[in-house]
Image (cartoon, rainbow, N blue to C red):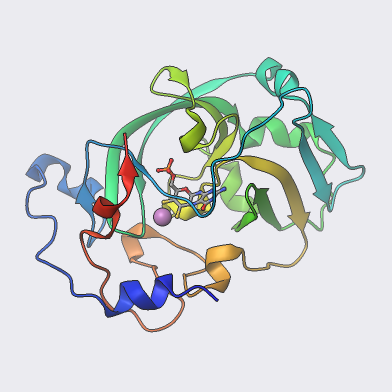
Length: 225
Ligand SMILES: Nc1nc2c(c(=O)[nH]1)N[C@H]1C(S)=C(S)[C@@H](COP(=O)(O)O)O[C@H]1N2
Ligand SMILES: [Mo]
């Protein structure tokens, strides 16, 4: 069992986000600190892939299971989005620039059944996170393979990750391998381990239990680039 949620809840919060430019403050959710750097956060080791073997599989409530090679993903219409991202460990990064396939552009190819209401993103190594299907139809939710004009780096999720910018960043899975459509909701990895199922940063939906403070500097102890 993971104790991350408990650990974050128990720690003290130093005075937060005072340094934010007043013009940007409305974009910074409560209890967040803006960083220029890009922290690297994940469980386990960065996966190493043989791209001849790599596939993205689509399963669950679909007419037929299917999979995509990375080349097939690259041939789909590409979109760029610039969005702010917010991690539950209290960092926010503004104006991050991503390129990839919008989920709503991929969806018509997948033969999804009407019963499908939720999606589980399965990722390496042993990670999963759940998002309502309706959420994924927004104009800025994508399967991303480029960041800031360059291919995604391996530590940030190469070859393919999701971007679900209006939820805390744990809902944006790195190294995705399988998209499962579900008729009923089911909690993913952090959602089973003390974190909120909805994860709206502006509503401060951090934990599934009682809401207590997270240390402002939790993320500064991690690697970043
Ligand atoms: N596969 C996988 N994806 C993941 C995670 C993980 O542990 N494994 N951690 C999540 C969390 S908690 C965060 S904050 C972001 C961090 O993404 P970054 O390292 O690119 O900043 O990835 C999310 N996606
Ligand atoms: Mo996170």
